[in-house]
Amino acid sequence: MIENFNNTKELLVFGIAGMPGAGKTEVCKILSKKFNAPIFIMGDIIRRIAKEKNIEPTRKNLEKIMLKIREEKGEDIIAKKIFEEIKLSNIKNGVIIIDGIRSIHELDFFKKKFKNFILLAVIASKENRFLRLFKRRREDDPLGFEEFIRRDRIESSIGLGAVLAEADFYILNNGTLKELNKQIQKILSIIIKEKIKK
Image 1: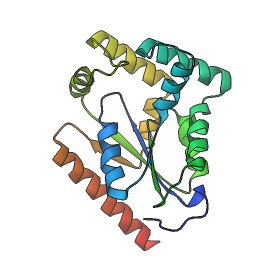
Image 2: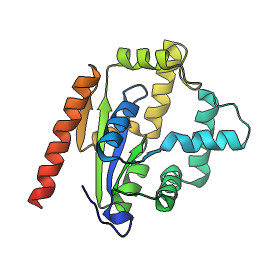
Image 3: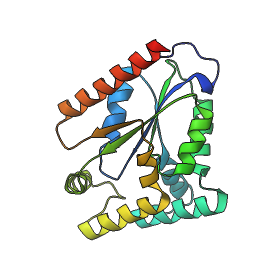
């Protein structure tokens, strides 16, 4: 864990990627509790834009905003906005978590900005992902399986598959929270050992 840092380059950054319902939020919570680290959520940028423009935050509306802003301002625009938030934040322990990296452009941007960047891919079965989203019932969550599949295709079209292929570690999240915690602890042990070697 990095305790003393003078700029964003010295931060230890966990980037979290995964299909909708894979369990990214739970992974972020576990890491945040472990390091007392802030979570920066990529999707909140889009939800904030919707609120500012008085647009109802339905899945289709958020998708339109997400695609439009990328088309108009570049594929890495959301990453840039998150980076500006990070720079303005009071980060005490030198560790941050970025939730919801969706494109290779965003990934490349973060890798350039952060020397200590670790990408974690959260993987879960289609059935488990759908059930989680259905139970969560957030405004932008799918109401049926067809809508769920359509959302998956949108995520894939942005380039999420390419991001997952670049992961430093994979977390299979089809079990219990206890099992999820165990996997994360194992990954952290590997990261700590690697840093000690350096």
